Image (cartoon, rainbow, N blue to C red; front, side):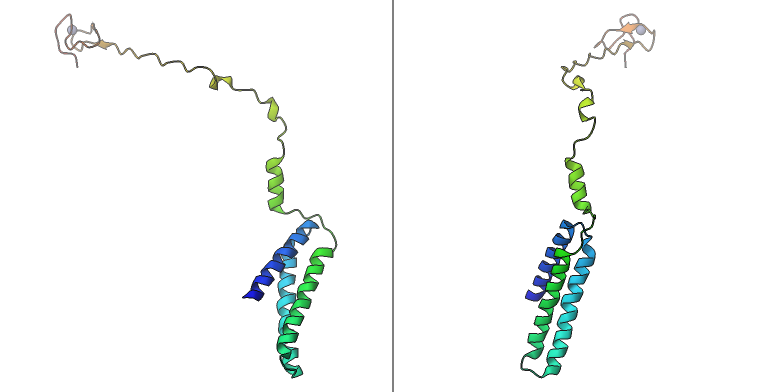
Length: 148
Ligand SMILES: [Zn+2]
């Protein structure tokens, strides 16, 4: 488990170094894993064949370390590129000032005191004779019909 943790750490370090030089990190992560695991297996194989006591262990982890070092050096000192991390790009865009930002007219209606809504005068009319009925009256003044 410790080895997997180390491999993940190395992948992260190589990714960071690759990005710092403008290189796409995916290939370096693949390179890291292939070199580490591939050389480790090769080391185990050679160590087992060598018949040295703990040879598989010594060669296995020794080769894994060499693979790790090669991948690290490739990511750290390889040729530079112009790849930009999409995440970094988004962050820069978010912080960049927007041209024309200061020309937007200020909508000061938001600061104007709210006008109280005029009370709605719902004039009622008598259903029977059609004359206007004052608010609150239940019966028509003129014909006496009940107002609904
Ligand atoms: Zn009426």
